Image (tube, rainbow, N blue to C red; front, side, top):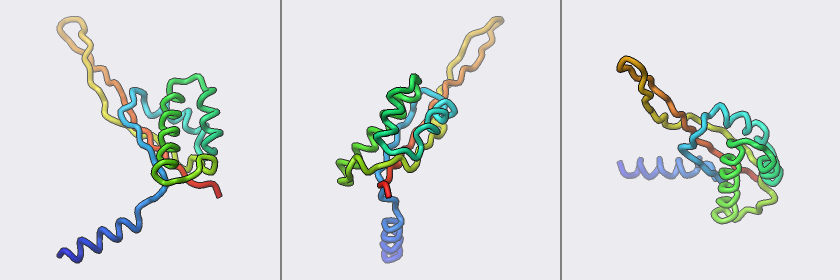
Length: 128
């Protein structure tokens, strides 16, 4: 029994992705609004992506910029990689938790307000 568990853990460790990653959760912006800005920087070098995001007048750009800078810092400190050789390999967002609020209406009724949140995942890789 213990031998099988050790073999499984070794197999999982071998198949684990070793690229630098950063995840930002519970952002108060819908995933569809984030995707518009993400399409501009996906696949670009990190320096170029940061420059694009700093000059984009959008709330989503600030959030994505923070995630990319966090991934770059993880790459430098944890993996020992050079900042100039990195590019944004994967950048995607998913739906996070939805905050449910109520709006009081006439005749004792209530409307439900759904405040969407999202999660951003940034995966960097070395330029070839």
